[in-house]
Image (cartoon, rainbow, N blue to C red; front, side, top):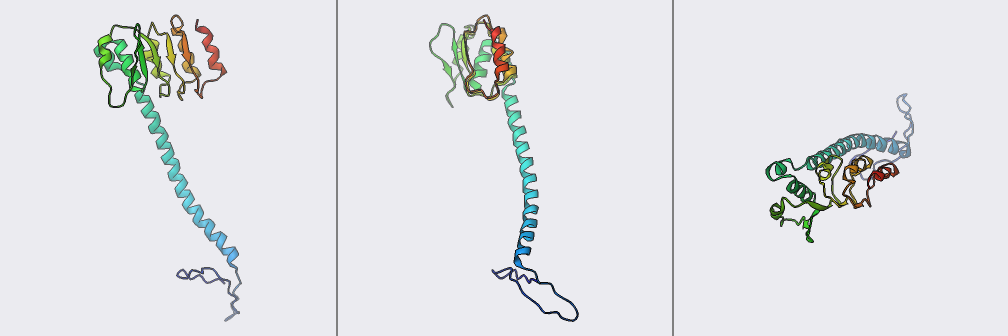
Length: 200
């Protein structure tokens, strides 16, 4: 029988006891008790910890997806107030991107805590280039971009949410688009690239 003294640092020692009053005490070694006890404790905490971690990771994933969907709803209020082109510029800047207007060399870029509404002065100038690289733009977020009739350059490089379905929508830009950058998009496959033959 093994006697465990919780206060002592040497917790498990093997003791041999002689038979007493007709009872025979079996001899147990610490090597058989320690793994069982440790395993039970580990199982208990792992069950609780893993379950909590699963819930936390699921919640984190759902929260991230909700934020992405919210960011990709589109600039409806800006479009209604100022027009389609300011809406696209505002949407791109909200994704920390950049926009170049037709006939202009300078870009309207996202600058942290320094963004202005200067682009509203060019509300009638067509958008020529859109840089949405490293952004969270997704299938639905392309809606305002696909409405640009004079778009010549579109940069979607390193966008984790751009996939084959997104590429299948780009054919509407075939009459104007000249440059399309898709490097570093992990969800694009050969099937999506085959859709690009529709771009002239």
